[in-house]
Amino acid sequence: AQKVTQAQTEISVVEKEDVTLDCVYETRDTTYYLFWYKQPPSGELVFLIRRNSFDEQNEISGRYSWNFQKSTSSFNFTITASQVVDSAVYFCALSDRTGANNLFFGTGTRLTVIP
Amino acid sequence: DAGVIQSPRHEVTEMGQEVTLRCKPISGHDYLFWYRQTMMRGLELLIYFNNNVPIDDSGMPEDRFSAKMPNASFSTLKIQPSEPRDSAVYFCASSFGRAGANVLTFGAGSRLTVL
Image 1 (cartoon, rainbow over the protein chains, first blue to last red):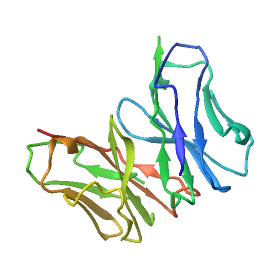
Image 2: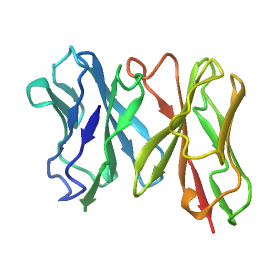
Image 3: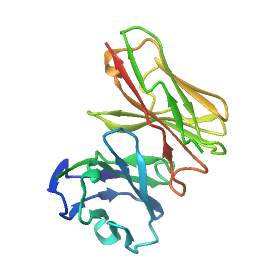
């Protein structure tokens, strides 16, 4: 069965520090998708990124970057030069055929950026 | 597009009362999902529809929960009778094409409190 582990329950950093949020997944499928969503204090879930299992290229979007490593079944998310607005709960999620292609979420990491 | 619209945003009710949560998906999206978020269980998929037809309701916790999608632009999640343990944030999401290859867009959520 699929599983997504976000071992870091809460992280606090001082503004401008870099921070990495870890995500480890389990799946028996060779075709799957990985996602990161952000849930700010206002409560909505905001899509950040999707990667498929055949594309291990790392991705950078502004201050955000993602490191996908199939060898360690990890899909980590790094925020560079963190800002107060980055304070949120971040969810990693997996979608695979075994799970009928539905999104299976990790438990989330609460990031607090201290000014 | 206005995104996925949910109502009400907040609902406080007493145990035993009927609760109806509403969702308007993004126009043109053919998949609709209902998720529930609690501190104990995180984000759980309750049910999803494809072209207005319920595909998988295995996540619906009990017979007290029911969901309908009478047309492509409207869905309801009903709890009858409600219980305090139903207190949670309920999210509706929609996508064009099944999850995984396609991104789910979430609504702002409906926070339900059952006293």
